[in-house]
Image 1 (cartoon, rainbow, N blue to C red):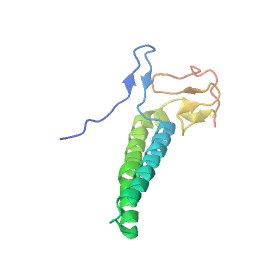
Image 2 (image 1 turned 120 degrees about the horizontal axis):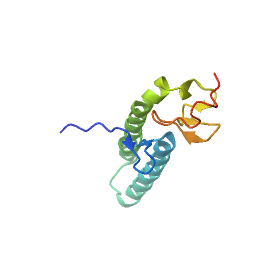
Image 3 (image 1 turned 30 degrees about the horizontal axis):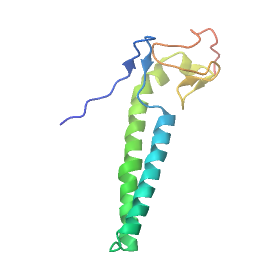
Amino acid sequence: MMQQEERPQEDPQEGKRTYRYTVGSIVSWAIFRAAAVIGVMLLVSEYVRWLDYGTWWAATLLLFYAAVLHPMQIQYRIYKDETKNVMEGTLCSTCRYFEPTGVMCSKLDEHVSEDHIPCEGELWEPK
Protein backbone atom coordinates (compact mmCIF):
# COMPACT_ATOMS: atom_id res chain seq x y z
CA MET A 1 0.00 0.00 0.00
CA MET A 2 1.45 3.39 -0.95
CA GLN A 3 1.45 6.12 1.65
CA GLN A 4 -0.38 9.24 0.61
CA GLU A 5 1.71 12.41 0.46
CA GLU A 6 0.62 14.99 3.04
CA ARG A 7 0.09 18.55 1.83
CA PRO A 8 -0.60 21.75 3.74
CA GLN A 9 -4.31 22.19 4.33
CA GLU A 10 -6.45 25.28 4.06
CA ASP A 11 -7.74 26.66 7.36
CA PRO A 12 -11.45 27.21 6.66
CA GLN A 13 -11.80 30.03 9.19
CA GLU A 14 -8.99 32.27 7.97
CA GLY A 15 -8.21 30.96 4.49
CA LYS A 16 -4.55 30.45 5.50
CA ARG A 17 -2.49 27.33 5.02
CA THR A 18 -1.77 25.30 8.10
CA TYR A 19 1.16 22.93 8.24
CA ARG A 20 0.99 19.57 9.89
CA TYR A 21 4.35 19.76 11.69
CA THR A 22 6.48 22.46 13.26
CA VAL A 23 9.94 22.06 14.74
CA GLY A 24 8.47 22.50 18.22
CA SER A 25 5.88 19.78 17.73
CA ILE A 26 8.49 17.40 16.32
CA VAL A 27 10.82 17.92 19.29
CA SER A 28 8.09 17.82 21.94
CA TRP A 29 6.58 14.59 20.61
CA ALA A 30 10.07 13.07 20.43
CA ILE A 31 10.56 13.93 24.12
CA PHE A 32 7.21 12.35 25.03
CA ARG A 33 8.00 9.20 23.07
CA ALA A 34 11.49 9.00 24.61
CA ALA A 35 9.98 9.23 28.09
CA ALA A 36 7.53 6.46 27.20
CA VAL A 37 10.33 4.25 25.87
CA ILE A 38 12.39 4.78 29.02
CA GLY A 39 9.38 4.01 31.21
CA VAL A 40 8.46 0.88 29.30
CA MET A 41 12.00 -0.44 29.29
CA LEU A 42 12.42 0.20 33.02
CA LEU A 43 9.24 -1.81 33.63
CA VAL A 44 10.57 -4.55 31.37
CA SER A 45 13.82 -4.66 33.32
CA GLU A 46 11.88 -5.00 36.59
CA TYR A 47 9.41 -7.67 35.56
CA VAL A 48 11.26 -9.71 32.94
CA ARG A 49 13.98 -11.38 34.97
CA TRP A 50 15.23 -13.71 32.25
CA LEU A 51 16.35 -10.73 30.12
CA ASP A 52 20.08 -10.20 30.58
CA TYR A 53 21.70 -6.76 30.74
CA GLY A 54 23.20 -6.75 27.23
CA THR A 55 19.97 -7.87 25.59
CA TRP A 56 18.02 -5.25 27.57
CA TRP A 57 20.32 -2.47 26.29
CA ALA A 58 20.07 -3.72 22.72
CA ALA A 59 16.28 -3.85 22.94
CA THR A 60 16.18 -0.38 24.52
CA LEU A 61 18.33 1.14 21.78
CA LEU A 62 16.34 -0.61 19.04
CA LEU A 63 13.04 0.56 20.54
CA PHE A 64 14.43 4.09 20.99
CA TYR A 65 15.37 4.24 17.32
CA ALA A 66 12.07 2.71 16.16
CA ALA A 67 9.80 4.81 18.39
CA VAL A 68 11.69 8.10 18.69
CA LEU A 69 14.43 8.77 16.12
CA HIS A 70 12.89 7.28 12.98
CA PRO A 71 9.46 9.00 13.37
CA MET A 72 11.27 12.24 14.16
CA GLN A 73 13.28 11.99 10.93
CA ILE A 74 10.14 11.30 8.91
CA GLN A 75 8.28 14.24 10.48
CA TYR A 76 11.21 16.57 9.86
CA ARG A 77 11.39 15.47 6.22
CA ILE A 78 7.67 16.21 5.82
CA TYR A 79 8.17 19.58 7.54
CA LYS A 80 11.01 20.48 5.14
CA ASP A 81 8.92 19.46 2.12
CA GLU A 82 5.93 21.48 3.33
CA THR A 83 7.97 24.62 3.97
CA LYS A 84 10.29 24.35 0.97
CA ASN A 85 8.31 26.80 -1.17
CA VAL A 86 8.14 29.32 1.67
CA MET A 87 11.89 29.10 2.27
CA GLU A 88 12.81 29.52 -1.38
CA GLY A 89 10.09 31.50 -3.07
CA THR A 90 8.62 34.15 -0.79
CA LEU A 91 9.57 37.72 -0.04
CA CYS A 92 9.75 36.85 3.66
CA SER A 93 12.62 34.40 3.21
CA THR A 94 14.91 37.28 2.19
CA CYS A 95 13.90 39.53 5.10
CA ARG A 96 16.08 40.09 8.17
CA TYR A 97 13.14 39.30 10.48
CA PHE A 98 12.51 35.86 8.96
CA GLU A 99 13.26 32.94 11.29
CA PRO A 100 13.79 29.84 9.11
CA THR A 101 13.65 27.37 12.01
CA GLY A 102 10.08 28.32 12.83
CA VAL A 103 9.10 29.68 9.39
CA MET A 104 7.91 32.86 11.03
CA CYS A 105 8.36 36.60 11.14
CA SER A 106 10.16 37.48 14.36
CA LYS A 107 9.06 41.13 14.19
CA LEU A 108 5.33 40.32 14.13
CA ASP A 109 5.57 36.86 15.73
CA GLU A 110 3.41 35.28 13.03
CA HIS A 111 3.96 32.20 10.91
CA VAL A 112 4.58 32.72 7.21
CA SER A 113 3.03 30.65 4.44
CA GLU A 114 2.99 30.87 0.66
CA ASP A 115 -0.37 32.63 0.78
CA HIS A 116 0.15 34.72 3.92
CA ILE A 117 2.84 37.37 4.35
CA PRO A 118 2.26 38.88 7.81
CA CYS A 119 3.33 42.46 7.05
CA GLU A 120 2.16 42.48 3.41
CA GLY A 121 5.77 43.42 2.53
CA GLU A 122 5.69 46.77 4.35
CA LEU A 123 8.22 45.86 7.06
CA TRP A 124 10.58 44.02 4.71
CA GLU A 125 14.27 44.73 5.23
CA PRO A 126 17.09 42.90 3.45
CA LYS A 127 19.30 40.50 5.38
